Length: 346
Ligand code: KG4
Ligand code: ZN
Image (tube, rainbow, N blue to C red; front, side):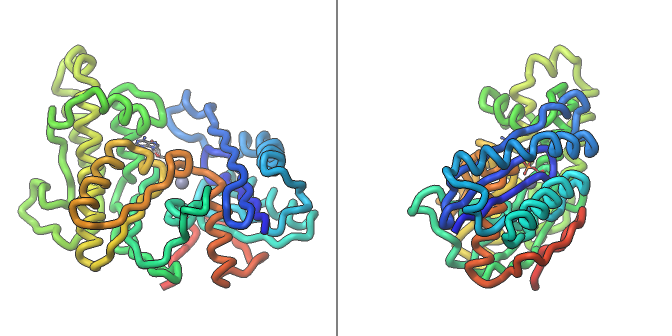
């Protein structure tokens, strides 16, 4: 079975083909146009998607060595995302499905991230067979879920303010880094000392309040932003410049230590032996190392997608459509468009 996946929810235009569940192509074009604005400009994103979608889909189909008529299913992101951007990909998918007389499967973007640790490139990769804890950390979402082997999930925690990726991007901006700052902070951190300064870890045992946060799986990153701003304002620009890698590493440590601590605590509390980390921030090398070390210490299996599948991509859209179709969990052609699509079954 050949599935075409289309992803246009934010600033990546992507198309992928899955042949019998395995990735045969995954083309991603990241829009550079937003750099000058320090964040994604929704209208510009929609226009870029419109400009690129035909050629990206053509490339995905060609690279998979098939013709469009060989496609069996068209799957596309239907939300959540920037509504104009989602509309471009979904309407294109709708038109293509109609022209080819093939079914369309709408896919929830965040749900696709959750299962991106199971994208198959070779026969060794497997679909989830057991319950796992899912940590989704992207530019817009930070969420912990318990996922069962019927692909049902329960949200046990989420950010009450900024997302983890947003915390990277906004503190990075304060340090004068380009958008998206996450990968740049990651790079700088490799040369810095993570213990240089202790930025706050909100809603954790190490937070400065006396309250116990033992079973609290929510996140908060807005205080970190304020703390970084105060730190920058209280030091000379030369000092900040000179210690940029140390400050970046200290910010990164504050974000990732909370992510690791809460994910592992959730696995232990719910007695679940596997954690899957997904979303753009799962590309972070510090998070990968720390999560690997903590999971190894507690005997927890860890699934993290390859970096190319961490950030937005269409292979995850096609993969989730495939998983759901194979388990009879989705009805093709039944689609909806929404900036805040619901994805909870229970
Ligand atoms: O999942 P994604 O591509 O798009 C959304 O759905 O939001 O995530 C983008 C986010 C951005 O905030 C970006 O800074 C962050 O992921 N990101 C990283 C890294 N690579 C991407 N954050 C930290 N370290 C990275 N290596
Ligand atoms: Zn995403």
